Amino acid sequence: MSKNNKPLHVAIVGTRGYPYVYGGYETFVKEMGERLVQRGIEVTVYCHAPLFEKKPKKVNGINLVYIPCVETKSLSQLTNSLLSMIHVCFSKVDVVFVVNSANGPFGILTKAFGKPSTINVDGLEWLRPKWKGLGARYYLFASRLATKLYDQLITDSDEMEKIYLEKFNAPSKMIAYGANPRLTSDSTLIEEWNLQKQSYFLIVGRLIPDNNADLIVEGFVKSKSKRKLVIVGDVPYHDKFAQRMKQVDDKRLIFTGYVRDQEQLASLYHNCYAYFHGHEYGGTNPAMLKALGFGCAILALNTRFNQEMLQKGKFGWYFEKNVASVIAITDIAENSPEKIENLRAHSREGLTDKYNWDVVTDEYETLFKALCKRKIKENLVEINY
Image (cartoon, helix red, strand yellow):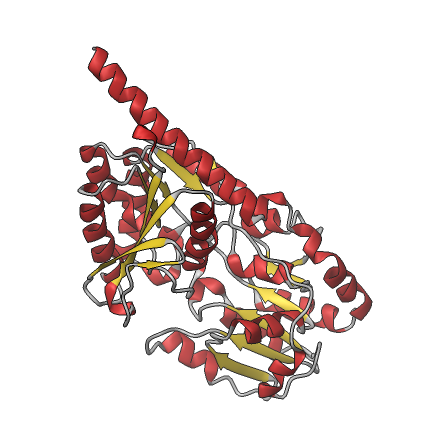
């Protein structure tokens, strides 16, 4: 309970909204937000108004506020977050929870209004190829400000926690992202693409440079694999990078585009021979957690984040960022069915309590309550002074 014995009230800012399970943050809001409500905590989620045709004020016990934005690729998120932060500062919420380091500068508002606040900074956005030039400089600037303007910094992996300490001398609280493991799926749902169980390798993710799907595709087509490579994902705009990939001439390649049916996506994960993970700059990656949860054999790009998630090779194999390495790991996997089956049999064991949604929610609930208590104590000190 917060002051006056009212339920603690938490506002979430910086996602597309709820219920809008489109990406990692939106899934996060669903999983954690619904659990917080079940525990008697009041939750308000700020939503991108243009994304919602219907605008109910409450869904599944979660309060919803719809905020407009400038609808361009680079400004929609920032303008929505800025207006949301202004709105939340004049509200009666107890704690403001912000996601995405791009919103770092907006912490000046919650600080000025005396609202307890915390931010989950996500990945190394300033290094991502899609944010070259001004975008990269802004993300670096915003990430630095996030470490100074919010009451608590949150990172979602041990390695990201180390990076923020190394680069910004900023301590953070590590709270990972959760997973929902599943043992079964409907194998008939992959027949849409003429696929059979274990007849294909799989990639899932946006077709952007920092996910390295182009590298995996190039290596795969040069391999001797007789299986197919299914690429799930796209970009919501015309993009030369994605188009070049789709034009690669090889009958083994299947580009599905977005797969929004979660049961169909589950079937693609669950029935693949092996899952390729080329994500490079994030911390705890939702697509990797899904692959573990569905019992996939995982072939991952060798990064410090993927080393952490797969526990230094205990739950997957690694390839380097070059075509020769992708060719090699594809051919080794193709010719090692028993070893691949062993990876599949044990991959769910990689989902330790660290990646359990109930444990993740416990961590956030404790943090939100601590921030609220800290603010009450500060106010008492000021009054006594």
